[in-house]
Image (cartoon, rainbow, N blue to C red; front, side, top):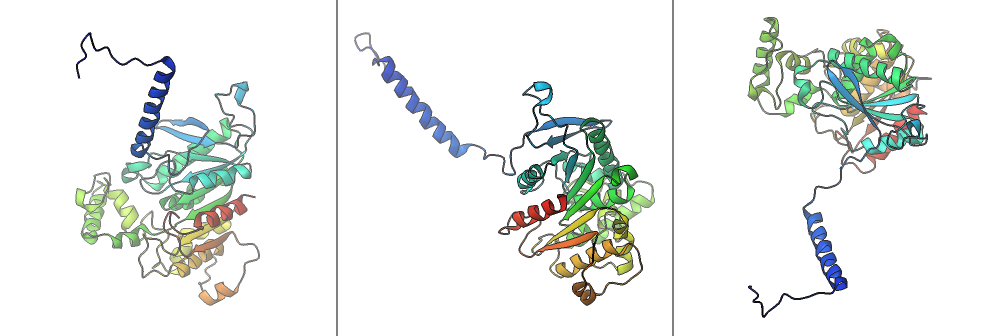
Length: 359
């Protein structure tokens, strides 16, 4: 409405005006909360962001226990030195930092035990996996570890792999730099599932796409990308074969492998001076229903303990026998899903088991 000179605007005292506008601001803030983005669901982390490789340019984030004074008495620079134990968390396909809902709980457990949590970005992070390979990932994990040794006082490492991060861990333990492998005291495989078997759960003519991918690889065109309908993300022919062909480079954990084939892929773990925990989810949505998950976990653990002895797996014998000091042990979370986001108490059981390995 228009106010004439004879109808002046309402006047408020400074005190009443302040109260009036304060009420408006409070009301607006309450309304904004209903539309705002929720707080980071997988946690908020404090630490140091650093570049561990310049070619290609790659970064990682380390969150150390906050018990040592900041670097050079500068409160804006967290001190990542003085913590020789580093746990490296490796996510699965399309993951980056904060790959799982247990990341924050894992960080807390690390800090309780004096470990730093390191979350790298690899060239294969996010959608980069489509043109990558386990060999490239292992090379970059070595770069990360060497940087941490040189600049962050790292002496001992632990690896926690989720999903395809399990493949990264197993591959690194065979093909990484020997002096770095020797620094690994613990390795955890959370959801070591078969991409090849998982693919059977999605629609599409997978046999046709695999045939085409193998044809491209045979023509030295492995870096050519597959047709859009072949996969949900851009992917090269060589990575397609690696993930989905029988015995592909990524094919470590398939249930249809013979004992000798599992030993060939996993037996090197038994030669190492470390402890490994394999964690399988009983309700993993990326594992076909026809896979006996509990039995598969036992076979994976058996293969990692046998050290290529040629001995055959016997389910009853393995159930009855307790290794005196096994390299690998298993944890079966019956109600858990792939990333432990649904089962009641699964994250607590998992994180506590990781903590026992770190002590």
